[in-house]
Image 1 (spheres, rainbow, N blue to C red):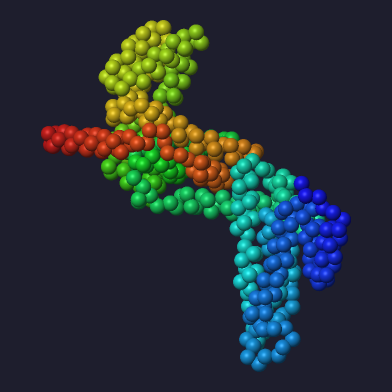
Image 2 (cartoon, helix red, strand yellow):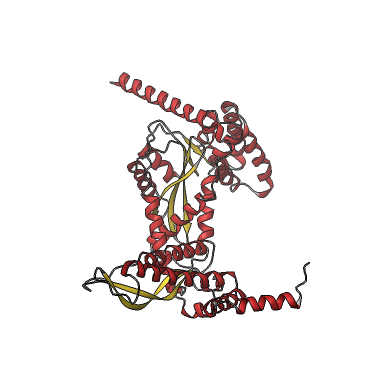
Length: 434
């Protein structure tokens, strides 16, 4: 470690004293700001640079100060208190004003226009609130920017943060619901409902043939009913979603969602029932002592790659449960064939495990719940939609390709083949009937 001697220290001090007074003052201010933290230093430097840039722009537009020029098209018009965005807050500045030579209109400064934009502040509010910071505590999460700037800083109060967040989430909702889907080639469409303190949204997640997960849209309603799901699917079709080649719909078993798929996408659309939901429904009808054995048999059957043998195993289990636990048997038989749709279409291994449940969609929903965990009361359905859309797009930033995505192209071909064969059989049946 190099030792600083008294001679070298005095030499440095002497060199500093030889600097101009204005430079020494600036260095002293920077040293003081540095003691308050890096952000305080950055904001202090930023304010100084901003003032210099604005004055330089004024001189460029108006001309040198104190020199008369007949060809001037603009005049200095003093200074005006204003504010710019620095350090995730609004900071007071003294803005120079420029007016036309006839003094008929104000000439805006491009430098000030750039720094006065609130985008950076709105982004900071958006990110921190989605991370779980409450409006009341937003100011406490700010990095220190120096006592002087702190005193004049604005837009960190609860109401200001709320306004910024509402504006940003409104943009997010509009962006999600305005997405054109013409160029999206889906292999899988997942639908599920999310309940947020008495309000319900139905959300849609698509999986492309390349394995990319895409939040498609959402719809608000009083419950997870057929009308809400139908409106959501109709909106997706209106925005250009092409399902003519066929798409596998993965549902949690709700009859309302199944009816919506049938009404909007057609009878020929293949549907995969979530085996995890079906498993829970069956086990809830059983006493605790029997659940482990039945769960093993259910999972063993669903793990088979032979659809006929898997279906036979499930029917045998249902028959055994008929006398001892008729409720469990009825629950198992209901929609049993649709729990094997992915197997019938040729999905195997990791891809089959992915498509046999609504876990990818529920993962997105969990991100929505995590983002909105601090909300105590939903004042309106519009507020619920804004938060849900923000959470869905936040989840999209974390998405990876689905497990087993390399086999999705084969699955898409199998779906298209099955839908085409079903359509042909339906046409033949209608012709025979006529």
